[in-house]
Length: 307
Image 1 (tube, helix red, strand yellow):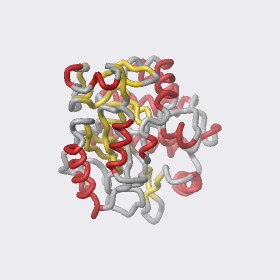
Image 2 (image 1 turned 135 degrees about the horizontal axis):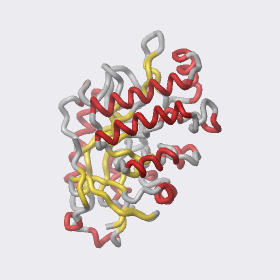
Image 3 (image 1 turned 180 degrees about the horizontal axis):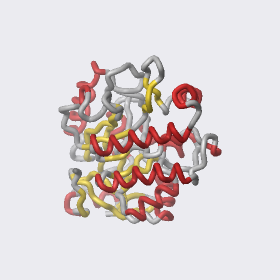
């Protein structure tokens, strides 16, 4: 269980340098997985942006071939490089070692493969794979619209309701079994649903599926990320998760944080001002961040978290 606490202002020795306002980001991908460049370039961008804390979260290795997870033979190098950057820039920014760990029942997760004994500052639990094709290949719902539809029709006979039910069932299992600090892009299954292509989010069956996951999240005390990548990368008005889910997070008092899911150094705070205004309208009063080695709640504006 993660530790949630109130903000300790004294833990931030450089707070005056940033006029008492700053952003953080803990969902970030470098060239070790599917990002664009070296980790140090992200750190330099974070410092230039006035961030006081920044977290790396490479896609953790899985036990089958992918073109976007850290390769097994580069995993140790990734871990060592982030540790070196922690020390090199410790007087300018807090750097946190994390991973985005996929959950596939019996196949991938926090206790599987190379990450089972690794001590991390935090980790994001995400679901990208839902069921498998007849040849055993895992269906990646985040690959392309064409590949999404291939899996939807070949595995689920075109029944989005059934595919969505499977996605959220895996999400619940992840929350219970892996106990992630952060829930990544909670409603990723909607990624290619622009214009209501597959379903309407107002449908009762869909809302019931989401509500069941929210119940599990609240019991786990995990933090739900508000992920801006769909907005700034794919011109989607909705964030991950959708507006109505954000309102439910506010009503249930489930902790939330703001992440950009950045894949290049210029995306570290992309979409944050847009998202902050949406969160305020939805009733979110605080955003959580890992600062001073503790998860803390901050007031915020469209310009950043407020000390």
